[in-house]
Each structure stands twice: as C-alpha cells, then as structure tokens.
Image 1 (cartoon, one colour):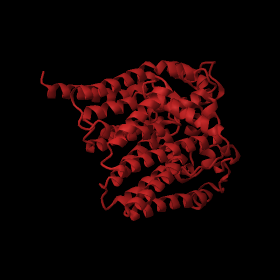
Image 2: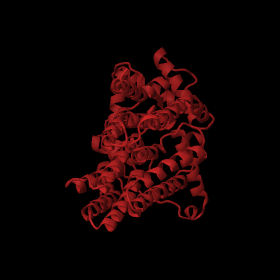
Image 3: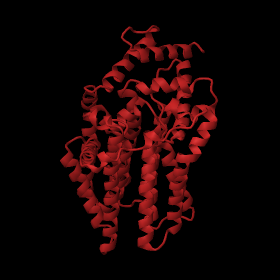
Image 4: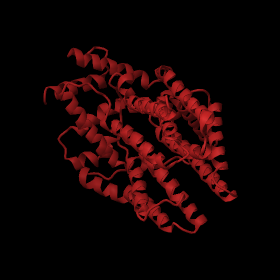
Length: 451
C-alpha cells in the first residue's frame, strides 16, 4: 500500500476515534449522570417567571451567591428546556446540550487552529486531540448534567490561547483588538476562572507590546475587556438583577480570605491538583512522568523557537507566567472552595478541565516547533507515544470512576442516577431514591404527562 494512502487511512481511523470519544460519555455513563445541584436549578429554569428574571437571579441559580456569570445561566436555561423536550419524547438522556456543543467546539477549534502549524501533521494533531478527549476528567465532565460554565470555558480558552499565539507571531489581522476584547469578555461572562484568564491574558499582551514596541491597540482592547467585566461585576450586573429579581446581590462570596494565601499550603495543594490533572491527561502513568513529558516538549519547543536568545527567552517567560498563574489560580480556588482539594472525587471532575484545554493548546504549539521536519521513524515514535497515552487514558476510566465512588459526593450522585433511570423506565419510584432524586422523578413524570 502506498505511504500516502496508508497515511490517509490512519488519519481517517483517528478522526473516527475522535467522533467516538465525543460520543463516549453517552456510552460510558449510560445516558449521563445527574449532579445534585442540577436537580434544583432545572425546575427553576422551567417555572413561570420571565426569561430576564430566570437569568438575572443568581440567588436562585447559585444558592444565594453572585459570581457575575449570567451568560452561563442563560445556557443552563437552554439546557433545561432541551432536557424537558427530550423527556416529553420519552428519551432519558442526562447529558446537557451545552456539553455536546462544548465537545464539538473543542474538536473544531483545535483542528482548525492547528492547520497553520506545519510542524504538526494532521495525524499528529488528531492523535494529540484524542489524548485530551480520552482523559477521564473530560469523560466525566461531559457525561454529567451540571453547569455549562467550565465545559464551555474550555474550548473558548483554548481558542483564545491559539489566537493570542497568532498575534504574538505577527499573524493578527486588523480586527484583532475587537477579537481580543470579545474573547476576554466571553471568558469572563462564562466563569470567574475565565475572568482570571482574561487578566493573565492582558498581562501577556502588555508584555508583548512592551517588548516589541507594537500592539498597543491590543493592550487597550484587553484592558477595556477587563474594565468592562469589572464594571459588569460591580455595578451593571447588580443593577440589572435589582430590576429583574428585586434584590441587590451581595459581593461577599467573591471575597477570598487573604491569610491562607500568605501561607504555602494552598500552593502545595494547587501543585498536587495540577500534577494529578496532567497525569490523568497524559496516559495516567505518574506525576513524575507527566511533568517530565511536558518539560521535555517545552524545552524542545523553546530551543527551536528561533535563532538567537530573544525568541527563546520570550517563549520561556510566557510559559513561566502561564504556569505560575495556574498555581495561583488553583490556590485561590482551593481557599474559596476547599472540597476541590479535600474531596477526591472533585479533583477528577469539572474544575481542572479548562486547565487541561490550555495545556492541550500549549502542547500543540510547542510540539509543532519541537518536531518540525521530523519524518520516518522519528515521527513514528511520537505517534506511538501518543497512542500509548490514549490507551492509558481509556484503560483507567473504570479506575478513576471507582476512586470517585470512594468519596462523599460521587458516591451519592452516581448510584442515585442509576436508580432514577430504572424508576423512570419502570414508571414508579424506587424506595431507595433519596429526597432530591425522588422529587426530580416526580418532576420528570409531570413533564412526561405534559404538565
């Protein structure tokens, strides 16, 4: 068989596996898993209030907290109505539409963005994407009906990283300032993590302008986005909420305790979570191997960044800032929400997904430099390593599920979802259903009855 035809065959098989990975949450979780909080907010999104009231009511949607992420509430509202329609069609699917869209966006953005990386062949890029899609954190996050926030933030963050990289490489168009403003606002409106990433991105754009003596319009756009989102958080959002829902939300939840952040513990815990996320991402071998792989790819990419010291130092500084920002961000998240570290099931679900998407984008950029020009056995070694990581990820799916079942949260939502599914199929509630799932069963039955 000619090499070109064989290569096309491998690429076709890999693209088929990508589609299978996108569909895998439906199969592995047998139609999905219902998180406890969703039992509360689906009913609220289906009541008789106005759309504006439903979206601008964080106390109802977020258990009396305000996080300035009303865009995610609007998407959750759509998810709830799609769920209702599926129930009316007698389809018990507990995976939200937003998760499917997030998966499609991830595939589309990554494959489109990596087309300009000549050092990254289509087969190599597809295998790298498959490493991400096959890791357990992606599998469980996309297989659970929860919130749209971080599943959608992941592809938006990845796309923003690719776009900023094109800006730094001098490939930006005249609409770049508008694009940067829009992307930073979009990330911020989806999640507080997105706002943090917008701040980090603004710092990187400012450093780029200072170093190159150009791109000041990008700095203005990035700073304007951060300012606009700050204004929305502090004034615009509360003003709309007061008129839509009748109260002024408190900003107390956004206040992070300062004293713990002056100690080393949150940062050590942050490094531990980041190490676990990398391990789960890269074949589930060990933290040492995961860090070694990332470090080796980064070192090779930096070395081949360009002639002279300046490009290498610039790329090193960018990667160092990004890495440090992740440590700080997760430390803040742990201080704000201790179960992220203390509950083992929370380490392998939802929260680390945007970080993994960012790692995927950075690995693509670095690998394209590191292996540029490789053919024959060298490229084959890279492909074998990626296939081994994919196989390692899939082989550990049941292991991580069992680990999650040892903790206090997943050990309730997973078996209760299974009991709920059997109850809906039988047409009567199983006595093992706890109160929240029993009430949700009754909601589902009312929906099926057309009420």
